Length: 386
Ligand code: PMT
Image 1 (cartoon, rainbow, N blue to C red):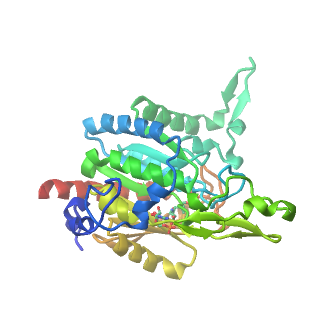
Image 2: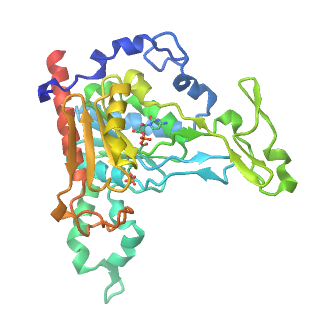
Image 3: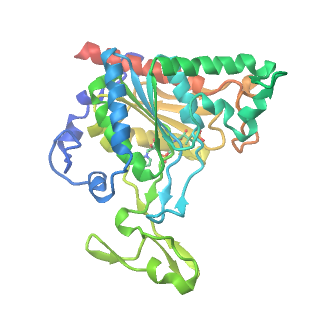
């Protein structure tokens, strides 16, 4: 399909979808009818205590950039935890360090976007990521001079000053907002609220969903309050039944004899409601993570068809820093790859498990300009069809 046919924002393409949906809290533009798991989720799972404050910051940020017609990207980053207890001692987590999100956020800022960086607390952050790896600790870049003052060693001056300048620019121009989450529940509440707050941006809003969101969770109704007791002598509290939708069930995580049994519910897929209801005019980019190369393209195509958004970026766990697959209705399937010769030791020396070191060229420096190009084209198409 030619580039000029990149889809216009969802407002013009999704009327049929939204006509079939309803929200008890009017979160799908007030349209009527079926209660789906995505919509009941927010009545059944508690609002995070930090949400109102984060949302207030987001609204101020969005207003500021909407008034100057700047494009705003919501970049999600890092893994989500799944607590097993209300007073959480144990939780399930995933591998994501937030490299993709933090690195991409820098390139979006470089491309002129304002960025809301919705990230897993303590995962990598834009700019500071260059110095927060265990293999790249900031203390190793410093020394004390003859007067005892701490200074950056000569060999690191130029790289550090480049990063510092970019960081200071983002601070000065107020183009970067950092909002943390921890659990999958925190993430989903923030995603919905921020998406709705971004609606005034229209097509200038971009969603870049790089966070590794859990597919399974413990719903509030089946969560035990206290630490699950491993000793059989103390099982009575953790195995107590809970009432969920008028059926009596065991807690999602409980002991049976010496075994910990974990029976998780599926997390509703929120991409559909994001596309149809929360962000009807924005460009939406989702990531698809797989480990089996033979499944990647098929799963990415499937996601694009199912959620009817703009772009799926497929990546494999072991090669995600070297190659990704773009799948879009407008441009079909295209691999984006870091050139072989450019692979070597980078500023951020990490290991992705493939045995290779990080690339000198960060793949996000190729991904983000492509996404920005597609976004601008979508905005132009939208303006010309208005
Ligand atoms: O952080 P790094 O170590 O750099 O790793 C980056 C990454 C591999 C995590 C990133 O590039 C990536 O692929 N992120 C998406 C991982 C993921 O959740 O993939 P998925 O196939 O489970 O989900 C596909 C999409 O559905 C995602 O955009 C996700 O936001 C969305 N989703 C997932 C679960 C869920 N319950 N609801 C959703 O809407």
